[in-house]
Amino acid sequence: MVAKHTLYIVATPIGHRDDVSIRAIDTLKRVDRVLAEDTRHSGSLLRHHGITTPTVSLHEHNEQQRVSSVLDWLKSGESLALISDAGTPLISDPGYRLVNACLEAGVMVSPVPGASAVIAALSVSGLPTDAFRFVGFPPAKSAARERWLSTLKADPHTLVMYESPHRIQASLASMQSVFGPDRPITVARELTKQYETLLHGTIQSVLDRMKADVNQTRGEFVVMVGGSAPVAEGQFELDAVIQVLSPHLPPKTVARCASELVGVPKQEAYRRVLHLAQT
Image (cartoon, rainbow, N blue to C red; front, side):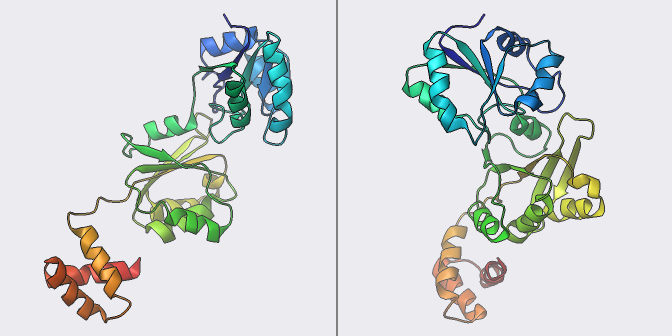
């Protein structure tokens, strides 16, 4: 059953057309209209499941203009469903403006959960999943991307992002530069589709495998990067002292002074001076 005056946020498959819940199919059949990111793309999925509900386009370029019409339909007693091209709507997809407008207007918004590329990829990544940070798509241009990645470098949580086929190698190269070549990573390609691939390893090894096989750069990607290694007790204080002294003194002098100020062995301080100079 569906309720009047309600917008349903319905998750659809991320690849395999049968990865959709019974409730999602029933909801899409019973609502008055389906708001789809691309009506042609979604049409084949709807026909596959015997859904003949009228569709209306709602995408990033027309969402703002559609809001008033959608609110009128909902207030008149209709029930509607919002779907994206794949997965759960609003996750790096259109819908935020509409949902926010509905809530401000006192219109009920209800989720019909299902597939999500983020969760599907994390479940097979082999990386820690007790805490993670989804950051969407990286910036397209390399300089902006590297600045953006630098803000994430010290994050201790598994990082999850989307990437497109024509930028995947460039993004991995930027990650190698900012995070270092040995940071663990999993790249999930074409999840639940015929050519599904999971590449596990370090940033360097996964980038090398992509360069060696052009097929690994085709499709849609979820990229998961292991979080920054935890900093040992006292490391923050040592690093802070080194960063203050380094612009003014030679490395060995910095190490000697930091050793005395923080109370760590001189060799340990010197190793840290050299490490920070390379990052």
